[in-house]
Image (cartoon, rainbow over all chains, first blue to last red; front, top):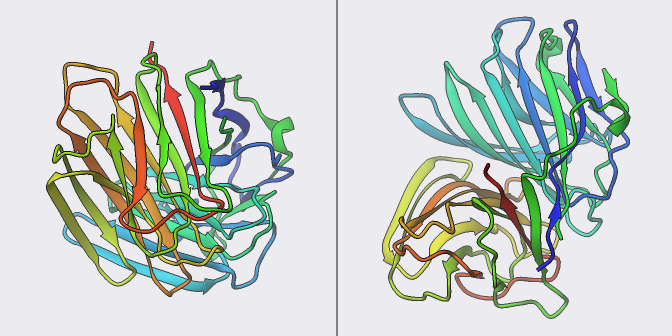
Amino acid sequence: MAAGITYTPLATTTLGSNTASVTFSSIPSTYTDLVLICSTASATAGGNELNCQVNSDTGSNYSFTYVLGNGSSAASGRGSNQTRWAPGEQSASFENPTLMYFFNYSNTTTYKTMLSRRNTVSNLTSAFVNLWRSTSAINSIYLYNASGHLFLSGSTFTLYGIKAA
Amino acid sequence: MPILGILASSVPAAAGAYDSIATVSVGSGGAASAEFTSIPSTYTHLQVRFINLQDSTQNIWMQFNGDTASNYSWHDLFGDGASASTGSGTNDVYFKIGYVGSTSTSYAGAGVTDILDYANTNKYKTARTLAGTDVNGSGGYVLLRSGSWRNTNAVTSIKILPTSGNFKQYSSFALYGIRGN
């Protein structure tokens, strides 16, 4: 069996001021999966999501299914023909760890599936399966705070590449 | 804030804690299963990352060391877009990991299964999975699953198979080893 070191950090940023969006661009196609880890907060309280688009696609090509628990009940929902994914939660304090797994992101045969864990520690935990109906390789990831709010200074975003043997 | 790809990286290089061990890619003829054999015992944990395309909308299972006896159990929590549900199995001949919600080649399921302390001979083996498939409103699940193999042997082989039918072309299963200190 071949073995090779992988899980390579590709890019990271720590926001030095409140910021509207973060973009990872020119993502190399040489990995098998991508992992994106975000530790974020919103500069404005209330009703926020961390949203995500890929390859600058603003069309209705996104969908997702989720399951969540909020301490008193569990629920599931889905969004179809969306203009973005909503893989992350945003509150006004740093209690919103978000993990995103992009599978086979550079293949040009299948639509792209992304799994995410969306959390606000004081409120809920959830898991999402996300679909982008495109066979294009993902070469950029755009993250923004919903409702035009800003990411709070100190938010961190780190992208890793995993290469299969 | 644009980040110019890897040029913006300020994270130090990986210290080699996560290794790619092997990959099974399904070819044009499909496959009834995917299997990793002769897994080295030199890691602390294993991780399987997978994309699954199938010729029927079914779960996929995992078995260790060729054991097809009733030595497995599992639980899951899942959402189908309308409600959250849970399931379990005891004395099964497998534990569940993934699912696919469409037989179309476009819609792949995906998942990550962590197999903890796989080479430890003092404990039964446990695994956890995050998996799912979304079909833009036409089916699919998101799944959180755990599994147990009631055996203290080190895991030396892993078999992944659909409940019925075959994996289709472009399915891919990649095995990684995670080192400890």
